[in-house]
Length: 443
Image 1 (spheres, rainbow, N blue to C red):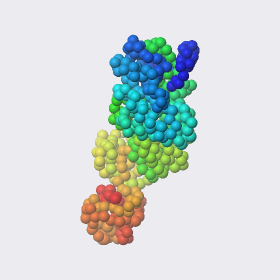
Image 2: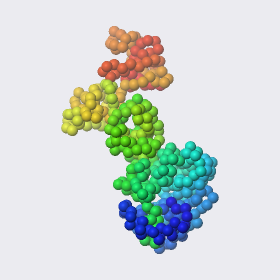
Image 3: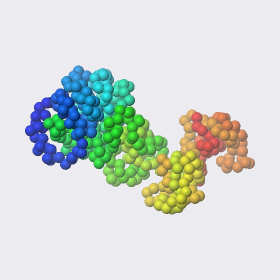
Image 4: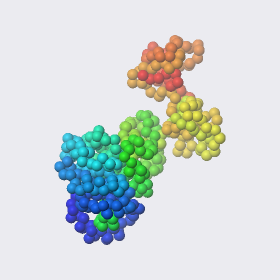
């Protein structure tokens, strides 16, 4: 995004040379417009409507400077039906000035804007201070609007000064004129010399099509005023828990910190040792992988049940297959919410659940293990139905110790696993009770 008008003249003189060297051709423009493009005329904007999918319009250069022509240009975008977003070229130097800058952007922007952008590409702050300020800008804007919030910068600056804070935004817009960025992004500013005949000048241009970005949003996402949460984004399964195992997908490209995932790390299983809720790309969660010691987006892994668990509740309807490779259907499906007994088996790199009638996938996203696997932090469980505690881990009638009615609370001290996969608790009185989720609930 341009700061100085002299660059326009240079681009006008050199644009044809630079443009002819570019390897990317846009089917429709997504231009960056600021006061350096001047006060646009009705004729120009009417013509621009046939050349641009949407426009991203600068509103201010920090809190102290409002773009000269943004209001006039935005009124013409509205008149001629050009969707647009509004951006703030950041000059804040602290969390407090970041908040003030966000408030100014919101008050100055035309309320027909489809989204708001933080253009953060220069700072005198340290990395930690910059991350805090960017997050403060985001939080302030989010308190003012439910519209989508976009983070803009060039790759090296983004990963150095906003690598944590930028992940909170609904999408990331990354500039790199020499090559495709290697971090996750939904909009790529690939050129600073795209000629717009409607305006008779060169502009910065961007791509959002699925072939050009790592996290794709359709045109309707960019041109709708709805919030990101109500957009058409389809999020990957994002409900992993500590202790589960995940397979690092072949298609994964970068860790959450922006560094490249080597091929040698992919297509292997890792234990999840921590999780974190965050919306980024097509993920609403990060998982920390033991061995790699890296945070990875949930979209880059596939969770599988590993080890014996015995009972599974299906999160969704599942096709039942005759073979372990899941290639030949039995013609039957297992119902969503059904609880089934199964044994885990491995086929190549992947796990399956073998039931009495065939095989289903052992993906964590498709089923839920139906025994508690750990001791609750409170050490209390509550009976969901009437049940017995036993004086032995062999739950037969002769070993019954005491009856507990539905709603009774029982204090537990340990959890055990049988060879077949079922779990049971030891009570504080030295007796034993089932850890089956149909029978008890943790407190």
